[in-house]
Length: 94
Image 1 (tube, rainbow, N blue to C red):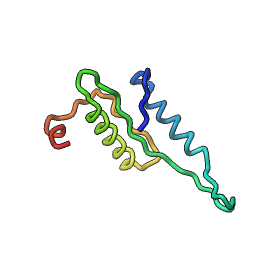
Image 2: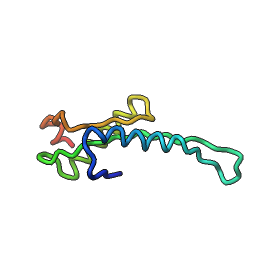
Image 3: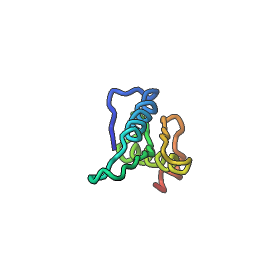
């Protein structure tokens, strides 16, 4: 989990995308040096809704965005910008 303070909602997706690209651009080499591989990142991000969120609901929304990223093909960022409110039954089900 990464918490970005002083970040506007419109900047959240691009910031997460920069992190995703930075990870992919840094291949990892085994100590022997004979093999290297690239790690990719699927990320879910959520914008804090001051009037509705607590820490738990914010993390749940980010987690749902992460699963959307994985389902959409991995190695991507999905953002829950807080504009679509959860249905009451989905909040209760958790």
